[in-house]
Amino acid sequence: MKDFIVHVVVSALLLVLVDYLLDGFAIAGFGHALIAALVLGIVNTIVRPVLLLVTLPITIVTLGLFLFVINALMLLLAAAVVPGFAIDGFGTALLAALLLALFNLVASSVLHPRRGGGPR
Image (tube, rainbow, N blue to C red):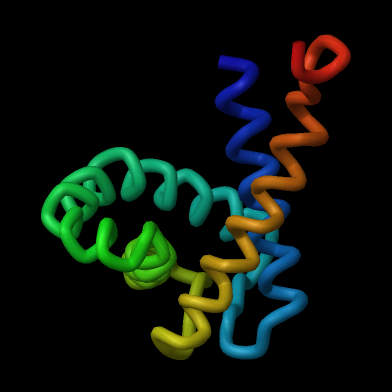
């Protein structure tokens, strides 16, 4: 349960960071960011797997780059549901998805550092 709460709070902080960096990506406050992070988690749990399965051929052809399009669509869906969370268009959502992927990679490496000394 503790890991879930940390994940939601970190996701909310990353959404606020993207809001700060991108025009056209707006979150009304940290409370709205927490709700958006929760909704985004639910959307990614329920809707994303179905889209991944349906778009598997194009994802394979694009060597996985189409996953950013799916992530952008998930952001747009979450923005449509959460009041106080708005994205101006698909281009902004795609750029936000790229930034969130990068920031999540950094946050994950900070929160879960590798144990051990490297490859054996």
